[in-house]
Image 1 (cartoon, rainbow, N blue to C red):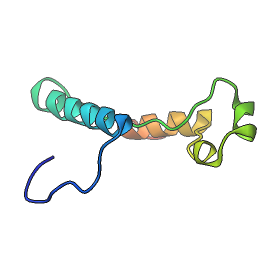
Image 2 (image 1 turned 120 degrees about the vertical axis):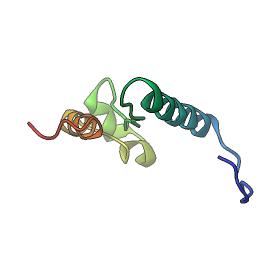
Image 3 (image 1 turned 60 degrees about the vertical axis):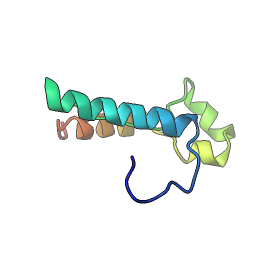
Length: 80
C-alpha cells in the first residue's frame, strides 16, 4: 500500500502476514488460477476452551459450522 496518504499506524506481525497473504492471492489470481486470501477466526483444539478464553479471543471463535460456511463462501462453493 502506498500512495499519497501516509500510514498513521505501525503494522504488527499479524498485519504484515495478512498483507503477504493478500498480495500472494492477488499475484496468483493474475497468473495461473483464481485465488483468495482467507482469514480464519479462532478454531481451538478443544471447543471447551471458549468458555475460559479472553473476550477478544472468544469473540473470534468459529465453530465447525461457521468454519465450513466461511470457507465454502470464500471459495464460491455456496451452501450444501
